[in-house]
Image (cartoon, rainbow, N blue to C red; front, side, top):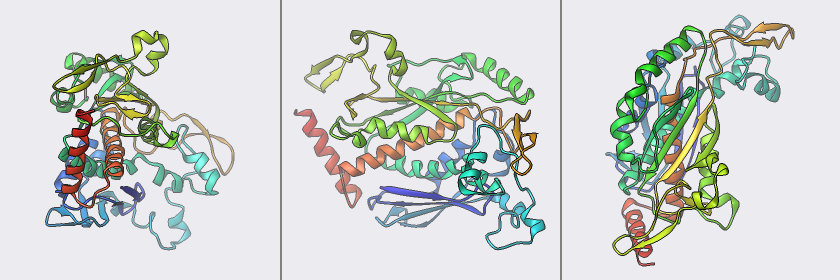
Length: 388
């Protein structure tokens, strides 16, 4: 399974093509729109969310509610494009139009300056339009398809915030995906314990009033995965490494950890390793999950626990100092739309991005032309593991 995304933030539409899905997967636009709506929610979101109400259109690869095994094409129309028709036109335009909304004052923390240097642009909007987090719309759309496939195989994911701009929140090894869905999945802060909700909302409001932004740490858990996904034989086949790359590929994410993560560096080996035991009814088990469901780059049958850290959104309403690329004179950086935080939405993106990697791994190990074959192959594999 592989995919490409295309489209600019203020362009006419966003597009993705997914290749390698088995035939017979039940799929509808509503399955995807649910995830797109989740991405646009969360306390602290601003103007763009009121403008755009993302709805997907499936234009290939699905017939009568089921995948065909051929490439699936998904499109999301940008409703705001009506105000950008000339500025974002693919055709040549007059100079007076070309220079409208031209950007020469790069924003610190964004791709603006380095992207302009790399591609030799005199208008940094060419960078902004593609480097925008708007691109994650289509990665969530792909993730929605991946989650649909995983759910058919008994694999579920959920996310919640464990640090909200400095507020430490509840998390434990024993927390289940179902518990996260029934708690964090039902509130606009994506937190398991709402006891601190009022304080966090007040903090977000104060940050917004100050024209500033905050980030935080998101945790994603996945349950139902069999042992042995990934491999120890090559560095590029380690599944935890693939997941780590996926997390830091998300806009504004700057770090990733599994299980105890960086805390493991402060502990002794006897406090970190997950001891192995045997239970006649269920087979091999662990007494803890400090390693986040991984050993040797492979799943060990426990829940996967992955955390990603999101930096504060770099676009501030009290702009930081920058330099005009034409005059090289100091200026306050340009301001596009911004939110005080997008942390709950970032958790949705992370959840769907990780779902995509897990679906790719499943389809690589159990190469199947249709869902029936895939389910049979996975069932036989699970049975073999139980008998090991």
